[in-house]
Image (cartoon, rainbow, N blue to C red):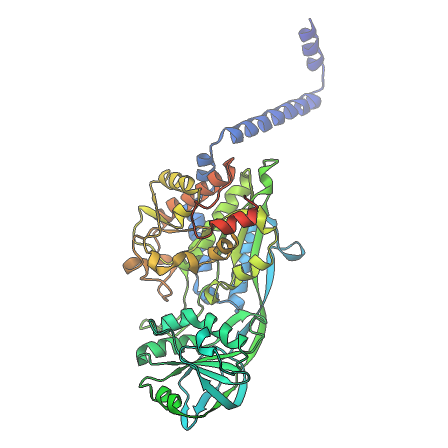
Length: 510
């Protein structure tokens, strides 16, 4: 009888009231259906619903366009790229996590122009074949002292305070410029501790190798503002026939004259882009997964035979930047149990500047960041694979392998460990602090041939990419992100890894 009564009441209502009630019921049913459908969707379904070829192409063609002129740090064009990335995150409804409720983390930097004059004289021997490892405008005329290779034992019993220290480059076993570069920080530290005014290393490198290093070090440099405040002078001096070394070794007294002038410093601000999506699990949302890539590249250089001078950086690293955008769109729409932190770094090509700054100015405490899933690329030579630098160094490796396989890709670890790729991208800043941090890269089985054909070349253009492969690659990354972020078990380093102990210290693991 009560049902008949309700029907009678409903039939007696006005047409407008009936429509209003019906719409209300239908709205409730629609909400229930959406909630049920969303819950029923697997992570795989969610990835397939947000990653599309057209979107990938659109982003990459913009970021790697000639109009952005290679996105070099410190140029107006990289600021355009930053604005594009920030506004894309905003469109995806990622929350800003930068300064003043913005997506930007401002980084004070400076450009250092090479000196117009760089020359020195040791006794009567003059030379201007010098490479500046660390320099400032500087004039010196005083005592110099020769100390073999400039290692600690060479300083014993010697008074070097206020003097210019002259040493041989590298070590007795390895004296090439690459080895000398690897020893530079140690030698500089020793010389400073003993009170030297400056350090000059004599090198007998071949002219071809010397010119390559000279072109790099004696060109304009970008650095974090104030990073060379001590003004300690450190140079390499070419001594191909060892005539300088032979002269000063036999001399009773060495007079050194060094002149560095015309070096100019211009300060500017560059920006990391940082966004956040809060996790859904009451406990796990206090753990953050970082999804990172650098968005800068190498700007404009000398024209090639085709008169192309723009280093568009489609592979390196427009692809990586858009990989992170794909993860951001997906996770903003379907939040994971752990919170997500999306970081796009500036200045990677200038020496990991953006990540160096971030690691010392994190927007979330480091101990809350449990994983950094970086994406960086040079090129690819195998479209059946995704190459993860450090794949088997963390306990999340099975999730990455599984995610790749869902899209017909095989995940492999670093095939060229001799290249030191793990330590050449922004992930290493996090790893050094103890945060597990592999790098997700396009498939390569050796670091040569097609894998490096476009690496830091003006030919790295968006129209040279295989977008059908990139769809699989992007989907594999996003699915791996979801699997790692939803796993009840927190990812960590595999035991025995180089950074295992640093991780235990950071997270207070006994």
